[in-house]
Amino acid sequence: MLYNVVDIQKILPHRYPFLLVDRITELAEGEYIEGYKNVSISEPVFQGHFPGHPIYPGVMIIEGMAQAGGVLAFKSMDDASQEAIENKVVYFMSIDKAKFRSPVTPGDQLVYKINVIKNKGAVWHLDAKAYVDDKLVAQAELKAMIVDK
Image (tube, rainbow, N blue to C red; front, top):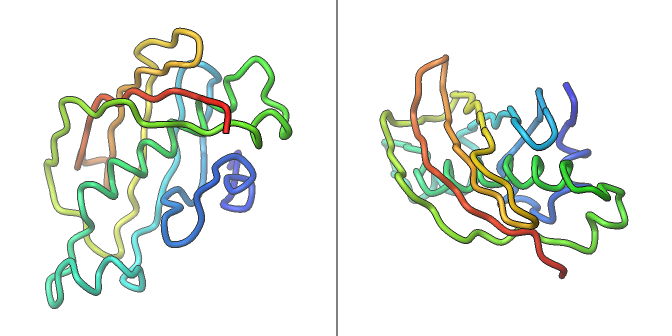
């Protein structure tokens, strides 16, 4: 374990119920990150998606992958000090080639695997994949930019 949820909250501004990464398990600055989210029936989204047939929304999977990518981008900055991170935020620029391959349900552990396609300055182009039990459940290409708050 590299970062637990308390450590992640020092990096990302997201909080419950929208912090969608529980742990970071691998990180190669500027290259790759792996982390996960435990999907629980107690999450508010399941009140409406769908009663009696809970399915974790694809947009939440995309957001979770983006948050893991945000941790990678922040930790790959030249100045990755806590003060520098606190004065920045990551903005989504685009989501391309999104595919949802299998439903995610309560009790699943979503494993996010994010690879850098390209990084130029503050802009990050990422190949993002999400797995449950080593089965690909979602993927997308994400672009984001680190900006001052």
